[in-house]
Length: 495
Image 1: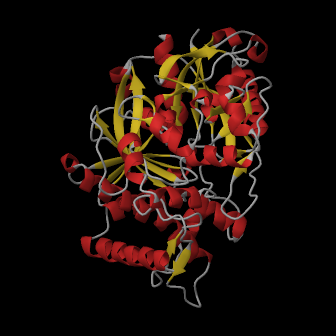
Image 2: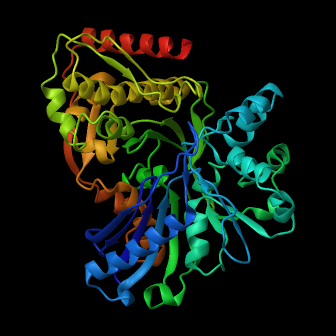
Image 3: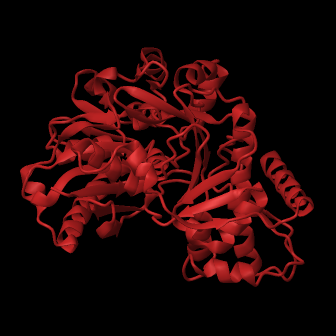
């Protein structure tokens, strides 16, 4: 058995990718699913869509690969993090739509808990902040709103999971109710420093611990798939949240290595090794991966809107037909105009953590058009990344000035965006040959556990550079532009 199947269950689509013994992509399949927006700031998924799209992609990828299911040694799963699903243990039926990580409906719950003085306790135990982004308050909201659900959870009738847990439960026919440490540490209910669910925080949120999954290493025996899914039982041996999986896929195994993934949002992770670093700048202390019972930690900065700003140009303003159009438009933009777009469509993430502000554009003139909007949209991602890197440098003085940033995700394919990123952070930006780093990370976890893939050092040696972007902007222009961005953010948050 020489092939590994990676499942990449994302915010807007599900994918399955088949990797061969050399970690090369043999085949893939992808299926988008519907987004639900019940109210402003609310985002939901139908859990049945998450499951059906994932199962369909797996079957399609295996068929496209032209390999028998007996060649699939193991499955690795990576998933959108913080998204919450609650379902009936007996039937598997969800009691509410999945509440997505982008959802801001629990802002009032978070504000009330902050007013009661709970945030310091949350930071101390979890490394996270009291923000609607994380799973805990979403789960509390469901239990508060769905009649009788809290009592049913106490009686063992309901199960909670992030998307990885829900998919594993479905794939194993309800035999495995598990997650891994990288997903657990994003729930707001897991003590990342002691490696256990927090009784104090679960009591604070009034969440019955009976409904929580068992927490495993990122490479572990999570369960066997049902025979009827793929014609044979296949072990699930690797699980990691999408950003941690990308960190693994980028081979950022040494302290000081950094990666930034540009998908719907942007997520930068800095490997800090075996010792967690407590942030002074409202970054997150998170588990980068956990192997053989030992967690490796990271500082993480989360930007809510990165690729989503390009989707807004396409779907909202209808200025472009496809995301790739932005590069040509940005290249033709009037250099005499300097629009600044603060894409706070659902508030601002790190290091600001302002859930209430909304997006704004500064510097508009009568001649501002699609070219200038596209340029400002791509630049906004570079500015936000610099915000994160400056906060990381301040939190972990051993880092010093960033030397190299490894990038991946859809927007990293844009040469224009990556060159501006290098210019504005004043550091080299490395784009790998394999941009599917999230799926590759999940595949490596499963393949290493199955004995198909090499160890960490052997995997790191296989990382290959596609292109390095070197900063070309002079220091004066860099600081002038960044200062303008900072002033735009301050103005946006003051409204």
